[in-house]
Length: 258
Image 1 (cartoon, one colour):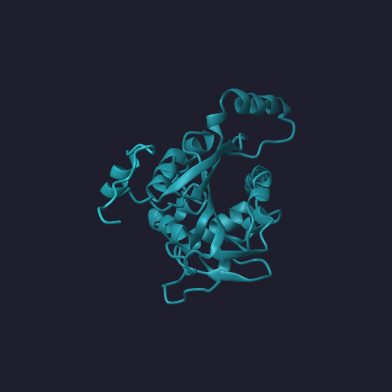
Image 2 (image 1 turned 135 degrees about the horizontal axis):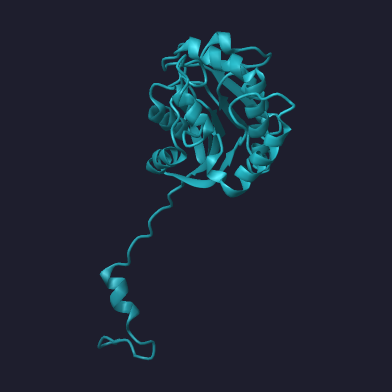
């Protein structure tokens, strides 16, 4: 695999991404990371190959710890978002400096919320994926308590400063880019606040909401596969069609003199 360094790459909205990286290390952010990691666990055995790219911030490297791909690497939007040892790439959030058709899977965890051009980012991901490669998009659900809190968060700090898009919008974009949605899931039914441990009576409400109102999960995961279009078979010629309707027991004409 080669990196296409001819494309532009620079930090974009560094403060927003840095705030989000810091929020993921707080208790509420750790809840999100842990539930996303558990939800992805059952999917990793189906992804085989050499390369898996995660485009996000440093704490999200934990999401691919159980992946079966040979090489997992991280792409971050800012040097200040890197807080781990290992290989990483710094790139602008709308451009992926990756060779086309070189990746077997791409993970975009909460990237579209903070991207100025999310559709362009999906186009870049489609170009970097190999045929039948997988694209995993994780986002905050606007039709949930998390989306409701965003509406009433006046400080607009991360993650509430991002744009929460519904999962059907993401699937529409992916369908235009020739992706087929193979799986989707809602998770994180906890209220977007850290409650004291003595508020134990709210735990059953979380399970009831997950059972009877699964679409109200604070986070969604959409897994899509890049379509591969086969060759269209050539139509039979008029000559082939005309000869195919001649009965087999009809004698062929014989020229005189032979």
